Image (cartoon, rainbow, N blue to C red):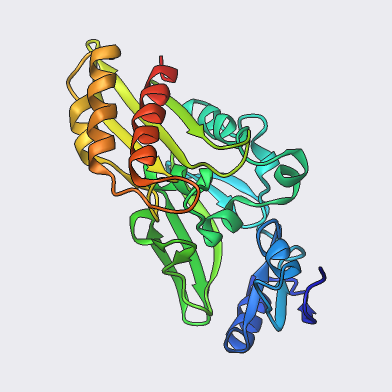
Amino acid sequence: MKSASFTRHVPKTVGEAISMLARLAAEDGRVLAGGQSLVPMMALRMARPAHLIDINEVAGLDTIVNDNGRLAIGALVRHGAFHQPVTEGPLGRLLTVVADSIGNYPIRMRGTMCGSLAHADPGSEWCLTAATLDAELVVRNQDGERRIPSNLFFDGIMSTTLKEDELLVEIRFPILPMDTMFGFFEFSHRARDLALAASLVTYRLEEGRMRDARLGIGGAEPTPRRIAAAEVALNGRRPGSEAFRLAARTAAHAVEPMDDSQIGVEHRRDLVEAVVQRALEQSL
């Protein structure tokens, strides 16, 4: 199928893009970056925006910068930028591991991290990463800039707290300490499809015991989130099968799984336990 007709607008600066969005958002104007989610929806007539604000020629949105203890990633940075670590240490390696699970090669070379975040699919790997690492999302409109913590950004299935006239310009990840351990694992029906359940974990070791544990779950619930009870189950314990099984069971009991035509609640709960266990094993 072909999309419904629309008008394409091509701003050259962030200011122009924000001005266009302010004017056109009420007329169902949408922002286009990678287009790997929006364009297929348009082709199926699931989305019929009257205006597309194509930001691909906006200067300054394709940068990755270390800034005061955070890694700032612009709105036009593609998934493929993370095929190799973009920064030293655990964070660079973690982003590379996660990126390898995203789609196929053409999708990774066109799709953008910030586009995936704005789309907010429950199975998105980058949404899980942002939630687990407590990333900060930088948005702008004509009133100025605001920074949204990741735990306040996702608002439901494919829904965020972005206002219709706001442009997501950047995501900022905290730089992880050099001794951070991490693991990531996801389950999907086909390799590199969106996850039905996924887990990302990080922790540090102090005298052989885990501390500062972060354990995130994606795909199982409408939005990704950290599972505090599972983090408590890890902190202060030695890494290994006993602690990992306890954390996995705790996470599975803590989630409120979606029930859909693909997979039932209890099956998805079982998947959560499995992906947490595997992610923790990967951390070693």
